[in-house]
Image 1 (cartoon, rainbow, N blue to C red):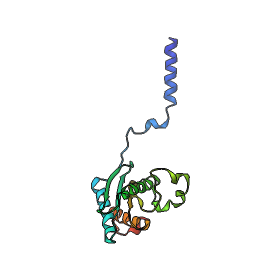
Image 2 (tube, one colour):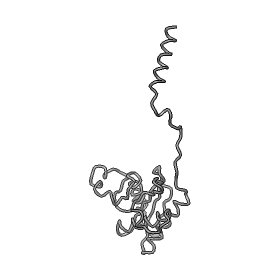
Image 3 (cartoon, helix red, strand yellow):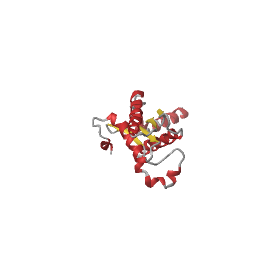
Image 4 (cartoon, one colour):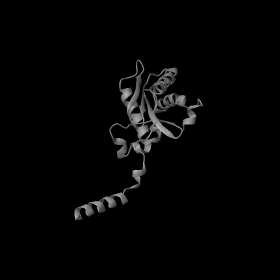
Amino acid sequence: MRVWFQRLALAGLFTLSTPGWADQPVAVEIKRLSMETALKIASAAIGECRKQGIQIGVVVMDRGSRTQVALRDTVAADITLRIAEEKAYAALSFNVATSELGARADSPLGKLDGLIMLPGGLPVQAGGQIYGAVGVSGAPSGKVDEDCAKAGICLLYTSPSPRDLR
């Protein structure tokens, strides 16, 4: 009888001490870019750079940091894809354009493998949610990389202007 009472008392304590998370749902809904949308973003980025006579590599990541689309134009260097992926990862990790990470690039954080904090990476956001990121590499400057990335993301917005992404 005494053991039964102790177990009952412990069960009561556990019930009373259950944190607020017990009322939370077991699963959450996560919105993701469709493959078709990711492909359109990447294609538009390449198209924008081609208009300028530049061949690039572009990577679109999903919100889980996985490469969803990777495209390398015909004569773009092989390394452009790796650089584009690391720019996209940095933009996704910090939820900010990589052009805004310059101060962090010289910190210990900027020395981590897999993060490139140079212009050309942008988070893909809509309606206050992050859906992923795009990274571009291969243009003569980071500004051009970023402009091409913006051109791809502009597909998600009603306004066709890359300025609206700032």
